[in-house]
Image (tube, rainbow, N blue to C red):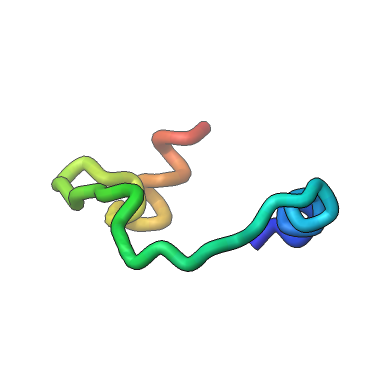
Length: 46
């Protein structure tokens, strides 16, 4: 986590609160780069 971000929030007077809920979602699919082999990722990025 970004410690600097939290320090700025706290020194800025903000209060942190736990929220028991989802803020994002994602799905895996066949062309997902995270699932590709290292060789495939290298080819696609360069």
